[in-house]
Amino acid sequence: MHDIDLSLFEPICLLLLDVDGVLTDGTLFYTETDTETKAFSVKDGLGLRMLVRSGIDVGIVTGRSSDALNRRCKELGITTVYDNVKDKAACLEAILARCRVQAGQTAFMGDDLPDIPLMKRAGLAIAVADAHPAVKSTAAFVTRAPGGRGAVREVCEHILHARGLWKTAAGKFL
Image (cartoon, rainbow, N blue to C red):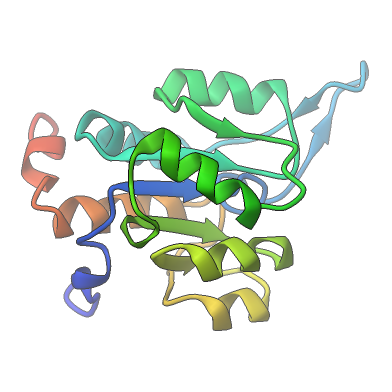
């Protein structure tokens, strides 16, 4: 983390995430009964749990809906979930009011073109390593890890370090 500008993450009180390509690697699985399933990283999950337990809000803004996502959010204590969103930037005002934060206190992680409008309105725009080139050029920070493979954990740890919450959040594990 010695080459990371943690000051980017210091004001963050709300981390907003796209799902497919950020919380997952973007792969969709369908069962024989046409149920959509997704694979989530437990490493990302622990990072999100540490954020939530440290008082940092986490929210989901995604263009799709799935039972797997709802279950994962429930497991992680994420209650701000906006799914089936067609215009991600337009729902930001509702999220800010619900979470009682300013746009400058938010970070949004995205990976593909529909994420760009919200990235432009968030205080900190973050792209995963394997994001579309236009998303990367919009981002103030690009993760080293790809979506679904530790990118979210990376950002969670940066926020915790920048906010002085790392030792408390990770203390019982260290």
